Length: 170
Image (spheres, rainbow, N blue to C red):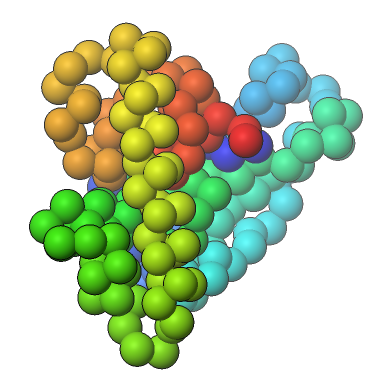
C-alpha cells in the first residue's frame, strides 16, 4: 500500500540527504492500536529518478507492506509528477501525439514505443482529472499542478484517486 510522504524537498535534496532514512510511519494503518508486529522493512530503489529510495514498513499480522511515496513522485509510473506534467504540456503544444512523443523521448526510442509511453501518461492524467470531478474535489485543484495536488490533498482523497497522483489500487 502506498502512503504519501509529505515533503517540501526537491528530488535532488531528497536523494542528497537520504530522506528515506528519516521517514517515519507512526503506527500501522491496519492496526492503529498496535500489537501487530509493525516494523520498518528497509527501502527499495526506484528506477527513475536514479538513487532515490522509498521507505517501507511491514505489518506481520496483516501480511502487508506500506511504502511512503514522496509528494513529487508519480505513483505506479516511473519518474516524477513534474515530468508527467511536462509531457502533458508538450503534448498540448504539439501538432500531434507522435511529434510530442518524438520530442520527449528522442532518437534512442522507437516512435511507436515513445507514443505508447506518452499516451500512458496522458491517459493517466485524464483519468485523474475525471476522478477529481466525480468525487467533488474543489475546482481550484483541477487547474493545480500535479505535485501541488499531491501535496495539498488529504490522504483520504488520495486513496480514492488513481495514479499517478493518487494511490487507488488498479
